[in-house]
Structure formats: structure tokens, C-alpha cells
Length: 150
Figure 1 (spheres, rainbow, N blue to C red):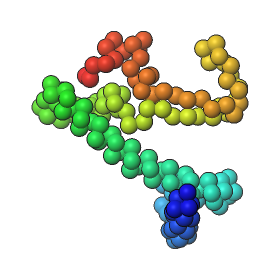
Figure 2 (figure 1 turned 90 degrees about the vertical axis):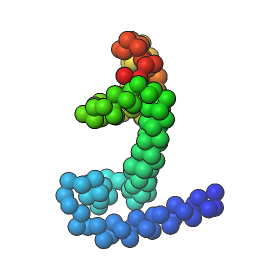
Figure 3 (figure 1 turned 30 degrees about the horizontal axis):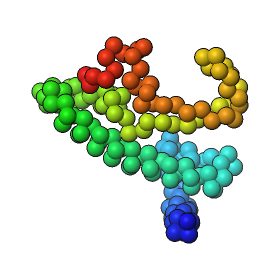
Figure 4 (figure 1 turned 180 degrees about the vertical axis):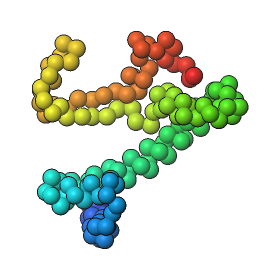
């Protein structure tokens, strides 16, 4: 825990130094929007750093996991790999299908911003709701053969 806390403190100092110099970030960038939210008080420094860390992780770890998963899936489905090699125009569709078939993110949590009913269950404002993407991506009610890579 001590090492983790030191790492977070060092990361926070690094971010502060970098974002202090990033005031000239081009408008419309994610960083510019995050800086504006921090400067206006919409988010605290702690929230700002946490979100930058999440963005860094989302931009690296999930991408690396997606590439690794995709290579493994394509190697285990040589017919689909052959189709993609023969027609590179299928790449956009292949990315979407690979994300569905073997997503690097299987479960995400969200906080309900208001109370509501969902399929007969009452969700209270502030309650955490977990979305099981891996299951939803294999739901036979919207896909005829969900366990098939196509």
C-alpha cells in the first residue's frame, strides 16, 4: 500500500506539472475539456488525476488486451482470418465483431443518476448497476448464433 500511495502521489505531481504547461491545449481536446472542468471547480484535483489515470489505462491496457484477444481469436478461427486477409475492406466490421466476440472489458459499473424501473426491478438513485457486456454480447435474443465469430 505504501508503494501504491507513493506511486499515486508521484503520478499526481507529474500530471500537475504537465497540465500546468498544457494550458494551451487545442480546444476540443479531451485534455482541454478536463482542464476546463478542473479550473471551473466541476471536478476536484483528485477527480482530475483519477480520470486522467483512467483515461491512460483505457487508452493502453484495454487496447493491448483487445489486440491480444483479437489475434488469439483470429488464430483459432482460421476461416475468418482468411476472409479478412482476402478482403481488408472487412477490417471495420471485423473490429466490431471481435469486440463483441471477445471484449477486453467484460463488466462495467455505473451509478444510477435517478431512480427507475428496469424489467420489473426498481433501481434507486445512486445505486450501482453492473452491466455484464460479455453476456450481453452473446445474447441469443438479438443474435441468431452468438457463439459464432462472423
